[in-house]
Length: 211
Image (cartoon, rainbow, N blue to C red; front, side, top):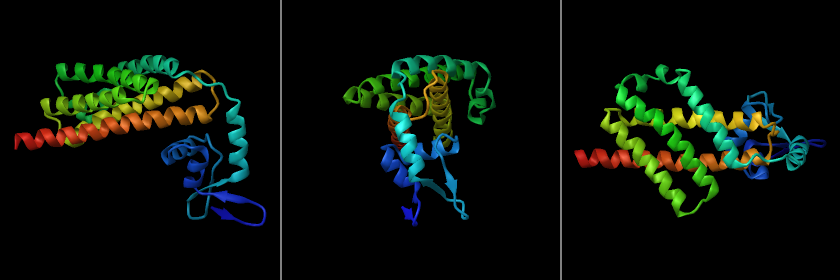
């Protein structure tokens, strides 16, 4: 945190702590112009506390979009993105036969449903869902000859498509960026991080078992 006689400047980590969100969320909001951000001569992000405080006050009166409604909207948008042929441009996808491609397209909707369950409950069932999805991505990748890097790229493609769809859902509902967005992004990051870790751990276990 930096201070002079008139203004209080915050670093990215300070803002994340102040808003109660993950630093990656603050970075994302900054990149998208959601948060008022300034740059130092060295290119580092800095935030005026007065501007962040004003942004927080505006956020408190923001109506929230229910997670289930956001998920339902996201399902349609993810399907649309897949239909638009974005998958065909992915190098890992080009390595797959038709059967494998169909299974990967279906897995995108499984990710949405898993996240929906996680948002409804962060208990043991949601952890099991993250494990099951991680196992699904890892075992499918190995079955169709994808290495660990391509398996990760496949998952990140669907994770990023889902993130984009959720942001569009909140935009479409005219929900201004605020704490509602922070809670949604935090839950998504938490869930998809668990899936990715389970994917990598499962892939490693399967490789060691084959060796």
